[in-house]
Image: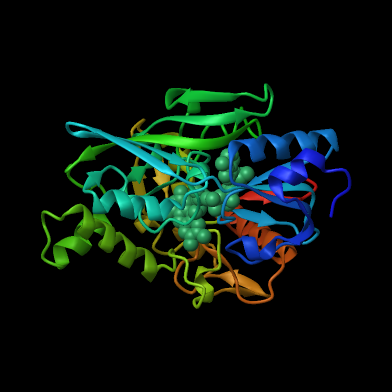
Length: 365
Ligand SMILES: Cc1cc2nc3c(=O)[nH]c(=O)nc-3n(C[C@H](O)[C@H](O)[C@H](O)COP(=O)(O)OP(=O)(O)OC[C@H]3O[C@@H](n4cnc5c(N)ncnc54)[C@H](O)[C@@H]3O)c2cc1C
C-alpha cells in the first residue's frame, strides 16, 4: 500500500506494484508503481492531486487497446477511467446521447444500433472505452467519431477544473486530435456527447463493406445489417478482440496509413516502380483535401514483412500485416525491435517513415 495516501486512498483504493500486462490487449508490459480505478469525477480529481502531491508521473488508462507498455512498467500512478452511465434525449430526428468515459465503446455502438440511431454503426467492434475514442478520432469503414461527436467534458490537468470542449475545439484529423498533439496529457475526458440520427441510413462509403453486403443480397441494409457485416469483415482480419485468437492480441493497426501530397506520392511511386514488381497496383484512397492516402499494410507486405512474420515472441498477424501481435510470451522490447525493422524496410523501399498509431507508456523517449 502506498504511504500517506489519505483522502485519495479513501476515494480511489490505490494499489501498489500492479502488473499492467493483463490490462492491455497486447498482454505485454511491466508493473505500475501505483494503480487505481476512478469510478467518479471525485476519485479522478483525488488521483490527479495525489500524484501531483507525490511528484509522480500520471498515466490515464482506458482499456489498454492502443498502448504499448514498457517491460519496466510505469514509475508513477496509472489511473483507469471507469465512470459509467449514459443519458439520452430524442428531439424529432435527433438523438443526443451523453456517455460516461468508462463505458465500453462497442457496447455503446450496439445500444445505439438497437435503438436504430445512425452515425456510428461502421465503428462496430472497435475495442476501448468511450473516453479514449476522441484521442485518436477513432475511425473505420468510412466513418469517424468526430462526425457525430458534439462536445465532451474533460478535467483540465492545468486548471483542475471540468471544462466543456466543442468538436471544433478538439481539432480532429485523421487518427488524431488536439489530445494527441497540442494538448497532449492536458485533459482527462470524463464524458462525451454525440448527436445521432433517429432511423437514419447507414453510412455506405467503404467499397469492401458495400461489396460484402451486395454479395449477400443486401443493397439497402439496415443499421443492424451494417453492424453485423462490419463485425464479420473485422473478424476476418482479427480486428475484433477474441482472447482465444492470438492474432487479435494486438493494438489493431500498428501504423497509420500515410497521407501524402500529390507530389510526394509521385516520388514514392517512382521509387517503387524501379524496385517492386506489381507496384502499379499500389492501392490509394483519395482524401477530402486532394491528398493521397496509402495502405500501410500494402507497403509493409511489399517491403518483405508478410502476414504471420515471426520475431521472437511477437510478430505480424497471420490475417493482417498491419497488426503486430503477441504470439505468446512477447516483450515490449521485441515489439520495439519489430516496429523499427518494419519502419526501416519501408523507409528503404519507399522513402517513407511509417508513423506508429499506439501510445508508448513508460519508455524513456
Ligand atoms: C483488435 C483491435 C482493433 C482496433 N481497431 C481500431 C479501428 O478500427 N480504428 C481505430 O481508430 N482504432 C482501433 N483500435 C485502437 C483502439 O481500439 C482505439 O484507439 C481505442 O479508442 C482505445 O481505447 P482504450 O480505452 O483501450 O484506450 P487506451 O489504449 O487505454 O489509451 C489510449 C490513449 O488514450 C488515452 N486515454 C484513454 N482514456 C482517456 C480519457 N478518458 N481521457 C484522456 N485520455 C485517455 C490514454 O492515455 C492513451 O494515450 C483497435 C485496437 C485493437 C486491439
